[in-house]
Structures are given as C-alpha cells and as structure tokens.
Image (tube, rainbow, N blue to C red; front, side):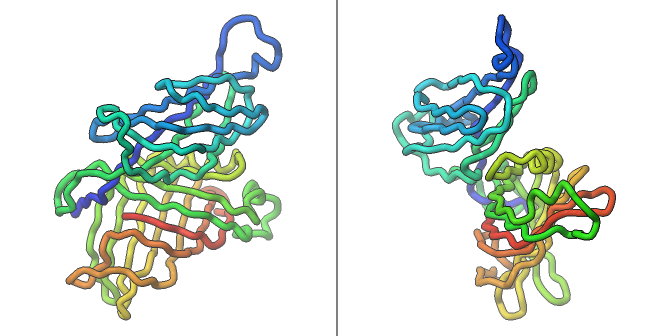
Length: 307
C-alpha cells in the first residue's frame, strides 16, 4: 500500500444556520434562523487560519450583504428558506500566528454555494480551500492532506426517460458546479495486461459540494455521499498518454459514476506508470438512485483533479 502526500490540505470555513430563537416573535420571525459565519478555522496540522478581506452576498427569501468581517465570528438573522452565499472581495488567508502575511490558497468550492435555513435545525455550508502542505511524498508515510475532483456537470438527459416522471427531471438541461475534496488517499500501481494504472483510493473525511441554484435533490445526494470512500484511476495508454477512468462513489441512496476520458498528455514515471499530478479531462458522468430501477441523469462533465 502506498500513501502519498499531494502537498495540500483542506481548510473549511463553516456557515451555520440554526433556529430556535426565544422571545415574542411574529409569524415571519418564528420561521427565522441565525446565520453564524466563523472566519477562523483550524487546519489538520493544528494551525489556525483566518479569512481576511471577504464580503459575503446572501440571496434568497432575504438579500443580505456581510461586509464587516473584522470579528472572528459574524451573525445575521435570516428567514427560513433556500439561499445562496457568494464569497467576494479581495480576500486572502492568514495564519493567526503571522497576521498581515497572506498565505497562498486556492478556493475549490463552487462560488456561490447554496444552503438552506430551517427552523430549529442545524445547517452547515463549507467554503473549502487548499493551502500548501509540508508532507513528504515518500511511500509508507501517513498524511492528512489530499486532493480533489472539481468542475461542472452538464446533465443532458434522463437515463431511463421511458419510466415516467422522476425526481431527476429537474436536473436535465442543468449545468452544476461541483467539488469532491479528500484529505488523504492510498495510491497503488497496478500492472494489467493492456495498461499500467495508478489507482487512487480516497479516504474520509471528504466533502461533496454542488453549486448553482438551491436543489433539495442535490442536497440529498450530497448528504448520501458524506464521508463515503471513493476511487478513480489514471491509466497509461500504449501510446504514452494518460486516461482518467473508473470513478465510483457509492452512498446508501445515490451513486456517482464518471466514465473514462479521452487520453490526454500526462507524465509517466520511469516504470511507465502515470504520476500523481493535476489533470483536466471531460468524462460522461451519471448520478443514479441505488434503489428501484436505478434511474438517474447523465451527461458530460468538465473535470479537473489532483490525486
């Protein structure tokens, strides 16, 4: 077993909506919740990072812009319902032990992100960032930083349009930004008869996010995939190219599958195996129910990833 570091880790900033305010309230206030936005988050190595210079635009039953992010935590009251929150401004990350010094960071979450405020329930929305890590890329070490798959899903049709109306109908014709982020992965080299393969087995904790307009169906899909291990592979073709293949993510009620891509130019190591490098591909992608007739939607996805 090979556990390789990819030189980055996830920093998650949480948006939490919770209901249950006390006091005398009118009907609208009774359906309200409090949006809590922490701007300081720990990384897996124990460092604290702060988001600086951010503005948040919230759109839904109410429209709110949060501009005063000088505190470690900001709050606002929102009516119950479906919202999107967009991160704007000349934001940057700083380590709390080195204030004033920006840290290189890449936000990988779709932006804006949808979220829901439900009375007396807790809702979390995470803006995910990758920042440089200090791990070794040697075989056999345990690391807690990892990679991701992100891009846009373009759903063109139902998988079984003859079966009548379906919950998946709402996704047909939609283009949905997404990201799947994981903190560590086991990388194995497999020598098959027709190709050499680098397989990537991603380990929890992991996060699946969808962007775009709020969707109760996609909320259910993301919840179904919470901390579900998944895998994909990079194959070396006989012509010396690399091919993305066999991405499967199985939850208790839904599954996501990405088929093989067109071969692309990529690096091979001295043994002829694909290296653990960033890539960009297009692959047909399915979201299916895992019960009943396995109905779902599919279409091409533009995917960029890092093992």
